[in-house]
Image (cartoon, rainbow, N blue to C red):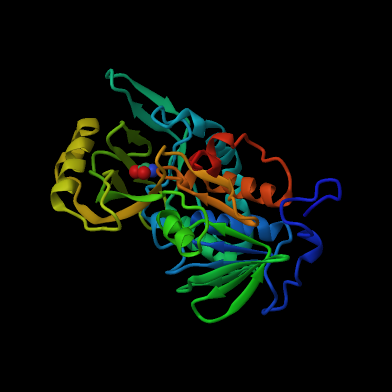
Length: 360
Ligand code: GLY
């Protein structure tokens, strides 16, 4: 990965790449978190020749990655301006990201919509050329893609200890297995702070921010193929795949810890907000409920992601994507791989640096 003139943050990374065929080799990189962000990073690093292990305390892609609505909301006027460059890069990278996943998995993930109708507070609307995807379709394809690579995926596994060594770190897994690794990337979504605290790394506050959501059958008189979104609610139709003919209505934004209870009164409020945009959604007869759930967005104190090197040598963080994790996965993977590769990232990530939370 490295050029000799630019040695990279992980010394001798390229020259120490382990043969992919061996199952018990020391990984170059361990990623904590098998959500969309963690697996996108793993795939990018694998494609650049690194040996990668991903560790997750639960099951892959089972949290925010599959709770999301899947809007690639690159032009949402309510997004913080500091997100614009990363969002734009990610949106440009999406077709290549999906092609790579399809090449590995044989599963095509189609865009569900190509336009978003954005409702502004002054009563006007504008049409944005944005896409959406079905995150569950993406998850199935991504998992199959990762399994088609030499990436080692260890589910239901925690890292119990990480000790610095001369060439990187020694990790002890909850299974009792010991691994030596050159780099550790924290990408555990809403659990990132917990993992970092356990391993005595920098303490960056990333809190769960709950979002409840419902999926309803599309009213028969409303063959919707555009996202409709205001600052308070969005309606995201599924036009292809297993969810075609339905629409998601989301989402609450709550500080409720790790609680994922779904409350009927909150679903009713979301439906009422949706009906302000498209009245047919008011009726549970016209738009019957299919399912409901809640997910946990990883939120930082300033609402921006945290991307970059931690104070502890060889440790990196890619988390806190809050409401835009699905959109920002491909660019986040590029940025992290560039950092490990010793290259300047393709976008300015100064505003997203972990250093911004350092105590002065
Ligand atoms: N990305 C939409 C949400 O966070 O509700």
